[in-house]
Image 1: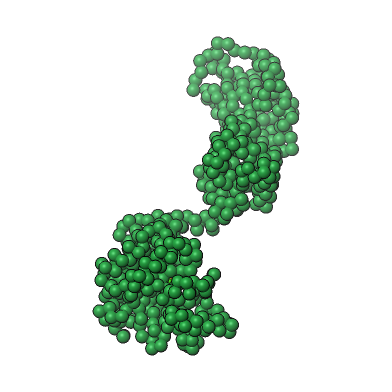
Image 2: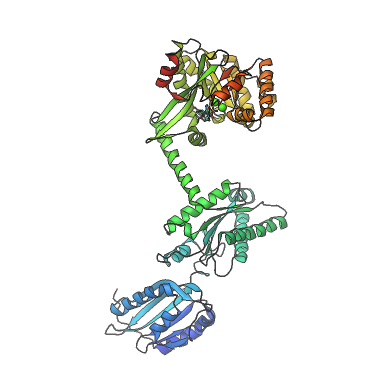
Length: 558
Ligand code: C2E
Ligand code: CA
Ligand code: CA
């Protein structure tokens, strides 16, 4: 940009006097760089902060390079050379000067080149401010905002500092605002800003990035340990504050810690993304705690995100990629086929994803409702077909507590039985104990309705977690499925075996049936045969497989 010739040229000496006049009024550093005399003058208070030979000096280029942090010298040289070589009139550079202790300090230097009539550069006047301090502050908390953090990162120009980001977020801030009012919420934010300010040391930077989130930046080699300690210090001040206020608002904060070296692409968007992930993790781990970012966790999160997307598409796309597998269940007494358990599989490209990975996602997203309906139809269609050969063939279908609580699963089951013309007592609905406890009332309702309709009920995964014997009598499921972990314990431990044996006897006396799951070897099957349970299921007897294989293996043979 070419400037108009200056009408009111100020003499450099006058500018120096003005700088002196302004000196007590501002934290910024004003300067004038006289090109003709090769001299420089800067607000005297700059000497309290930077390694300068004096507020006035000659041989400017060399002296400026001297005070500039080594890594930024080239950038400064390039910028000033360009000013001399062209008719550019503005200088705007974010870089680092060395403090009195030799440590780098981020500055934003903005200047204006004043040219004479012949367009010759006469001098530059300008202002330097420390971007880590007081500039562009947020009016509420008095802290720097997003723009300043962006500027700090831009100023790095590709070099990756050693240190960390600590992203702090207030837990349940929305409910504090809703319960105690926005003004109270604002007060909390201000106090939070003060607490953090007191805990960080002067070379760390603090920003308020979004409504209730703060970012502490340490580019001075801070370790994860130090970041965690810092988080704990802040937490303690917050606890103290809550106590002093007699728990009027129970304010806590979570912290996501991100090491600089873990940010592969050191850009604003990437840092925001990864630090947000870290903070979210901390909150998901129960809030009022910190979490340290690891690439492994992030990869797992991304994979889950991708899988969620693919599952959603697959459900919308007529369950493309879903497949029903069937695992045979045998009568223990004579080894004849009783039926099969339907187990969901999902194909993503060439890879088969196992239920352990995708069922929780289907549950979290509610997709288990349509997917559960789909497998119910697959299972009943398959049972109908099997019954042409084995009239008593029974099919077991797993039902998630999400289906119980969030959909009318009884209606789905009844409709499907009608549609596929299968007798209710040829369908076994499997429900897990852990689901029951959480959904007691829904569950009792479902249980009653299914029982009245004649559908059979199985209590799945018995022997994991909190097995509750009182359920057996109260709910009287038709079948108890002994989980593989219980079976395994019984194989290696006499006490557990006796327990299994007693349970088997007790269940029989209640006129319920027992199915032992997870029998893998001949030895295990022989040991189990001593009990014996009513039904056996496991890899030893047959692995889950597609319909076609199932027919080939078990139907032609029987
Ligand atoms: P589950 O209901 O307990 O199903 C039995 C699991 O044990 C199946 O795992 C089966 O492949 C496995 N298994 C059977 N025999 C053996 C054995 O001898 N050794 C070992 N190590 N494992 C054996 P899968 O298919 O991976 O399913 C895991 C879980 O995912 C199921 O446990 C069930 O809770 C859930 N799931 C599967 N399909 C569905 C479905 O359609 N709906 C719902 N809601 N959940 C499902
Ligand atoms: Ca099951
Ligand atoms: Ca099971």
